Length: 231
Image 1 (cartoon, one colour):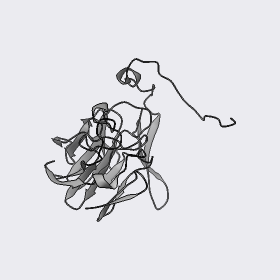
Image 2 (spheres, rainbow, N blue to C red; image 1 turned 60 degrees about the vertical axis):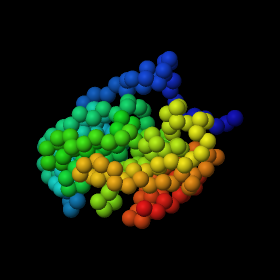
Image 3 (tube, rainbow, N blue to C red; image 1 turned 30 degrees about the vertical axis):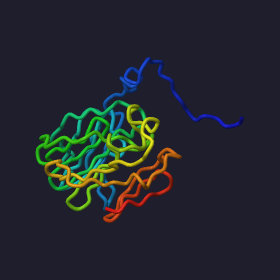
């Protein structure tokens, strides 16, 4: 066999908790956010961190937010000044696909394996907490879509497909019928809609290793191929 592995690691441990209890060492300055003037490319400001979670940076209303594996950090978009920080500790892991962040004019939303939370954009105060959001596949951040006046999350514990806790695995649940996505009120976190999509899936294959997407009409899920779920 001429195929070669590009990299790999092993962590001797008796449990998942022990194996992923610690992230690799990192120092302040290992990762940096840099803002550039789009007209001439000149540096406007920079902010250094020991870690910046992949795909979490978002900007809205003169602010930019990101996750550093321990906190949600909110900066002034023009100056880079830290405006507020909010505690948020997802499950430590190595892939960078820890969670998904969205922003609107009033809230910052972050979905991860420890639940969905929303903070006030103005001051970083915790506004509400929602259900746990399970990733669909390795390297696949949780689904989180803001469409109109509804915040959609995919794959909760109620969904009978994808990557699930052992007690809800397909080996104990034969059918793939269940609540696949929840539509929440962005202001309160209350459930407004339940989107049933179990019949769109088959148990013959795991979820594809690319992110789900959404349009104004459809949620596009990548399990067997591409499933179009009508909102």
